[in-house]
Image 1 (tube, rainbow, N blue to C red):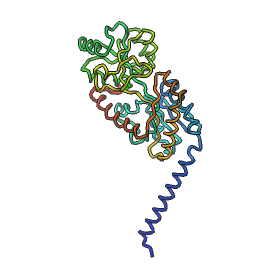
Image 2: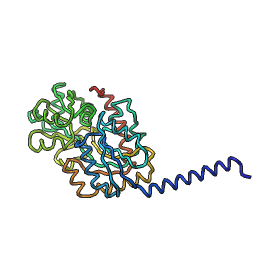
Image 3: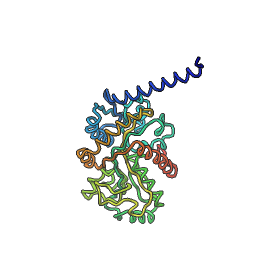
Image 4: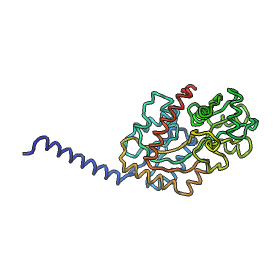
Length: 327
């Protein structure tokens, strides 16, 4: 006669086997209904534009209907929380940007964990932050900016699109790496920040390249450098910080997709393959490049490594620069 322990072990093995079969079957059938893609920012913003351009190629690559659902509010935290609490079945995707790794260090009491509650799918695009200056500022590159800032401590001001934005983080990291003193002037969006820099109300602006590039080309702003790991394809003549002598001053703004933690690996693999395929199409590459973004895919593991590294990096910058949600 079999022991109760033996019967229990056998039942558990059968249950696990059935679970594996069901999971494999559900992954094989995926997707069998429309997918909700939560964008935690309002329509017409950068995240929304990249998401909708991506979906023109992603939906047919995946063989599914993808519905973009804008859930803006609370600096992106509202929509991110909705995605974190969604079923882990592959039918909810969070499409967000690099503030995903900034907000957890800026807002200490978020209702979700950016690393634990999400599984990475793939990067989608990279957009560098660019440093631009009003033409009246007597500098033309980063070394000259550093020299001018050190000769005039606290007299330079720089704008960003808001507290805790990638541009704000880039500006504070630049100050830490160069030992300079500048005053941060936060705006509520890229439009007002660019307008005031063009008008000379502020001298410098750290912002995403697309927001300022047309004004650089028109001669209304001067491009001093990009805080990216490499030169932008959209602005190949603008040197990086590293090329101009400032080491470890990289703020690569990215867009990418996540799913709730616990989503079956086979489903994540299907999503990743579809995203990689979509991002390799010339049409999508051209559309993103026209907006100043570079189509960039990754494996889930590569994307997760970026998230882990940035959570540590931005914690250091936010702590050392004493950045708070109020400024």
